[in-house]
Amino acid sequence: MGSKERILRLKENTRRNILDKATCIIQSEGCDALTMRKLAEQIDYTPPMIYEYFNKKEAIFQELARKGYLKLAQLMEHAGLIQEDAQSQIAAMWKAYWEFAFSNQSIYQLMYGINVNCCPGTDNIPESDLVQKLMTPVIRSLYPKVSVPEEEVRMKFYTYWSVIHGLIALHIIHRGASSAIDHEILYEAINGITLSIRGEILPA
Image 1 (cartoon, one colour):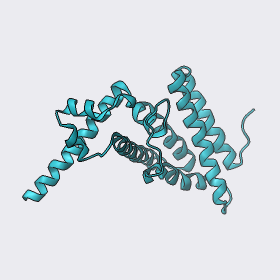
Image 2 (tube, helix red, strand yellow):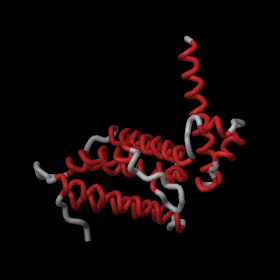
Image 3 (tube, helix red, strand yellow):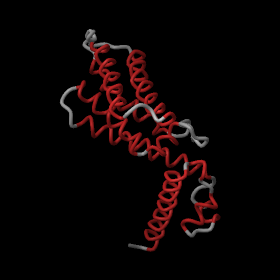
Image 4 (cartoon, helix red, strand yellow):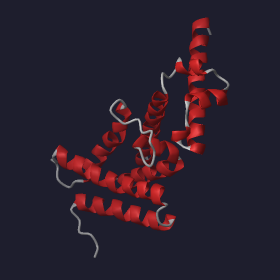
């Protein structure tokens, strides 16, 4: 490996170390506790060195959120690939979304601004659209009719997402119901929306 490659590798390792330590602080103390000074102290860097990689802490939040959206989309895609039909795909992919939210709760809160003051927003994070782009063709395949207006498919995506994200937010903010009840509500919501798309009658 040449000197240029070594320098690039060192920079990438340093950048990763900064993000890893920032994640640790957020997970243990919340993202509001993150400061550039605290970050520098915990990884034994000087603040100016961190500023060479991220010009402000909001840039760190943005990068962590971007990585969160990527990881979430990858998990959902993998969950869908191992299913044989669209209805099973929908259920598996939203279950993967749910599990990501609670396995990575601090990052999920950062991504969507739940009960925190440090949401980076989505305007400059193209990856924030990955879940919708991933789910749209699967939702479309649920329809029994061939031609479906794009607006209708989009509305159904937001119906799924608003219910599932809302349940997650309620659980995080108010501790929610029991885990078993949360899962029952989740599956009933997913199945209800799916059956409405397929034109099937919900059981009484």
